[in-house]
Each structure stands twice: as C-alpha cells, then as structure tokens.
Length: 101
Image 1: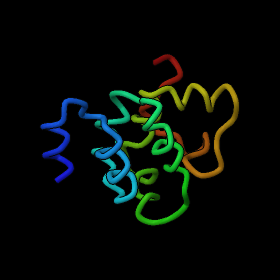
Image 2: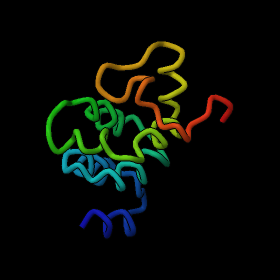
Image 3: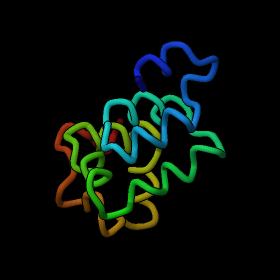
Image 4: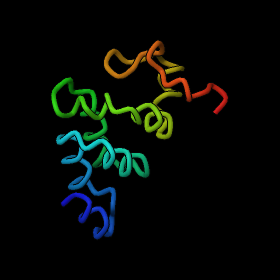
C-alpha cells in the first residue's frame, strides 16, 4: 500500500507515507522518502528513528542506514557534534564511507 501511495501521491514524501514506513520498520521506503526530502511535517518521523523499539529499530539496523544518514547530512553533523548513543557510533561506521566524500 505504501508503494502505491508513494507512486501516486502528488507529494511522494508525504507524512502519511513516511510515518507508517518508520513505524513499520520499512527501511527502504524511509530511505526513499526522507532520503529525498525532509519537510517540517516529516521531522517528527525522522526524530522517531531514535525510538529504541521494534520495528523502528530495524530502520537503524538496516545495512543501508549509514549511507542514508550520510546522504541527508547526519554523518557530517555527528562527526562535528558527536555521535548519538543509538545508531552507530564511529566504531561501527560503514567502511565504504570515506571522510573525503
């Protein structure tokens, strides 16, 4: 259903797509939507990624999470201000991410 909504909505990053994707642990849809556009209504959804509950945790544990975090600027912020407690700390960084990217 979320795939259909994403394909048919005028705004494919609408919170009615993003929030259920987060709460269901549907990482690929989270990366597809928030990775493209973070809007004020979606900011609450982005912040909820740090809820340490299932199935939301599965988004943070997904192998593509660090690439997503880098794309939206989280890695740069973490490197400047410190790594958060829940998603990966620097010792768990994806080795494909280089500091020169």
